[in-house]
Amino acid sequence: MITTSLRLPKSLLDQVRARAAEEDMKTTAWIRVLIEAALSDPGPNNIEARVRRLEAAVFEESA
Image 1: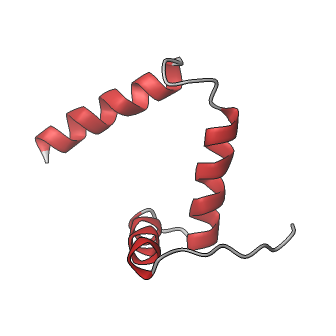
Image 2: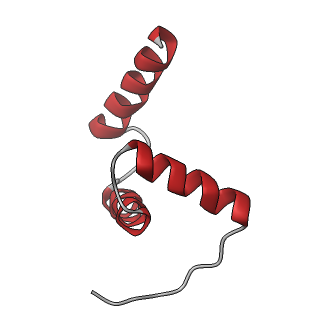
């Protein structure tokens, strides 16, 4: 692995840290997962992206 720096506004970093904690992940690992997903995702209409959006809508409404 190679280390790199990333500048983020404090408010954004706080949100990232909170989301990573919700998923019981380290902040850097959570960011890496998102980057890897974005690079492997061929577009907003692939089946995985569509399922994620549907799950988010269903679980958000039932919460």
